[in-house]
Image 1 (cartoon, rainbow, N blue to C red):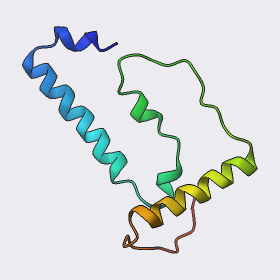
Image 2 (image 1 turned 90 degrees about the horizontal axis):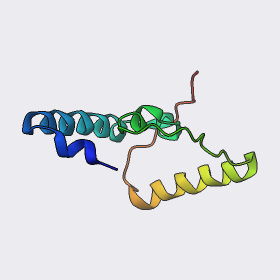
Image 3 (image 1 turned 90 degrees about the vertical axis):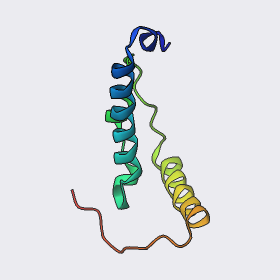
Image 4 (image 1 turned 120 degrees about the vertical axis):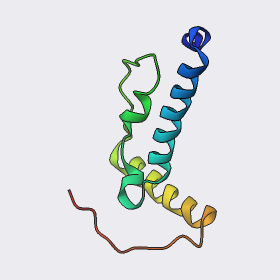
Length: 89
């Protein structure tokens, strides 16, 4: 799957690592409502292009997942600052 890496020079590999790290940092540094969004730019960093559309849960299951995700943030980073900002389109 990652055979494209085999033919890259050291400089090309370093450039690829830096590009991927920048994308990971951008995703890591997302905050607030950005955490809940679909992130196709991350997937676009892969050399292969997936044609498969993501499966989207029905609303009740989706909301339960959102609630569970938010609960996991309380468990994993209980001291993270809390904000009361509403989502703005």
